[in-house]
Image 1 (tube, helix red, strand yellow):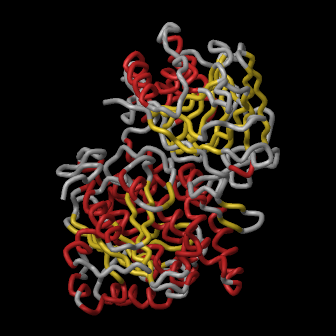
Image 2: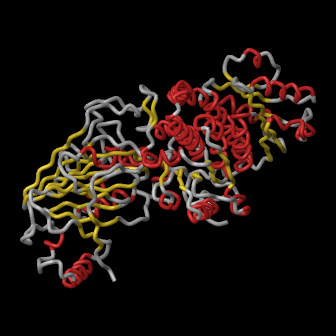
Image 3: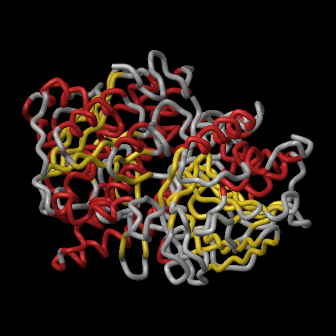
Length: 638
C-alpha cells in the first residue's frame, strides 16, 4: 500500500556530509502563480580548485543554450562529465565554459528534445541524474517549465528553508514515493481523509503549508548547501536525502525520490570513453593527474595549509578521543590503508591497526565502543568489508567509510566518511582509485592532527607536497615509452619478480606486485627489505629480476644496505630512485627516476611506474587487460 510520509522541519545545524559547501543560496519566492528567482553566490574563490580560475566564463548558473532553456546551479563534482561532454559535442552541442556543471544543463536539453517535450520537469531531472556519477547538489530552472524549480542531491548537501509571515498550522511536508500519479493521488486522498488533523481540502492543497485558518499561505523557499547561508531568513529547514527530488510549483513543495538504478547515456558511450587509449586501465593510469585533483578539490586550502573533510566534521572530537583506529579493507584498498598507517600514527599519536577484512572476520577481532573503524572500498560493495562493517556496528564502534561510489552499501551504513571522487573506474585492476584513497586517508590524518600545534610544520610540509602531486605525476607518465621498453627488454618472459622496499614504500611493493599478478599473470612478490635476510635472500641469483625502491627518506641507508646484499649475490636490480640521486646514478643497473616529494607521499609517485609496467607486461602477453581471468570489479561474494 503506497502512502505519504511526513518529513518534519528541523532548525539549521551543522551537516555531517562530505564535500565542500560554498555559501550558495537560491531564493525562490511563490505567491499564487507568480514566481521570481535570484541566485546569491559567495564571490570568494574556492582555494581547493586546481583546474579553474574564478572568471565570468566559469561562474554559475550555467545554461543549456543561447536561449537559456535550462539553467543549473551546482555544488559538488560530476566525475563522468568528460564522457558526457564528448557525447554531447558529437551531437552538436557547443560548450561555453570549462566546468562540469555545463554538461548537466546541456544534458537536460538533450533528453528533453529526445523526449519531444513530453517529459515533466521532475521526470526530466530523474533522467538526467541517472546519467551522472559523483557527488552533487543541483538546482534546475527552465523556460520550458515556467514558475517551476527542481532540486536534487547525491552525496553533497542540499537543504530547503521555508519562510512565511504567518504561523504554520503544521510543520511537516508530505513526501511522495514514486509510482503512477493517479495511484498516488487516490492513496493520498484516502490517507488525508483518515487524518482528522486536516480539514477537507483539494488534492493540490495537501501540498501547501496552511495557516491556522486552513488557507494556503504565500511562501518563500530557500535552497542552499549549508544552513548558515539562510539562517538570517528562516529557521525552518528540510534536509534532502540522497536522490530526493524537490519540485516547487504553484506555491507547493513536492519531494520524491529518483529511481536508484543508473543507466548509460548512449550505447556508444563505452567506445567514446576510451578516447585515444587502447584500454581502460591505460586511460585510468593517465587520468591520475586529474583524479588526484578531484580528490583534493574543495577540501584543501593551500594558502592556509588546512584541510576540511565535511563528512567528518561532526565526528572529529569523537575520533580524536578514541582508543585506537582500525582500518579494514581488501586487496588494493588494504594497501592504501597500509601506506598511510605511519602518517596517522605520527600526526595523531593514536594506535593504528590495518586488517584484511576476511582475516578480521575469521579471528572475530575484539572491537570496543571507543574504537574507530575505517572501512575502505573502491566500490563500497565488497562483501567481506561489508560483513566486517556490520560486525563493528553491532559492537558499538564509530564506523567511517572511504569509498568511490556514492550511495553504495558502505557509504549508506557507516556513520560518516569520505568520498574519494576518483571518477568511474572500469578496469578491474584498480589504479587511480588507489592513489585517490591514499590521498583521502592522508588528508584525514592531517585533519585529525590539527589539534597538535607541535605538528604544524609537518602538516604544512605534507600539504605543500599534495599541491605538487599533479605535476610530479605528469613527469612520471611522460616516461611511459622508456618503461614500456624496460618491460619488454628485461621483465617480459620472466617467471617471477621480486619488489622490495622499506617504510612508506612497503605498501608500494605489495600493491605493485598485486598489479603485476592480476593483469599480466606473472608471479610477483612484494617484500619488506628489512626481512631480506630472513629467507627471501635465498631466491636471489643472476636470473631473478628484482625491483628495489630506494628513495631519499630516513630509511635510505638501510635500503642501500639491501641493495648491496642483492648485488653481492649476483643480482642486478632495477632501482626506482629520486631524480638527481648521484649515488644511484653511479650504479651499473637499470633505473627508474621519480621526482622527490615529502616521505609520506612518495608512495603515490613510486607506484605509477609499477602500474605502467604491469600494463605493458599484460599487453605484451596478449591478455585481456581490463578483464583479467577469474576476477571481477566488485567482489560481492565471499
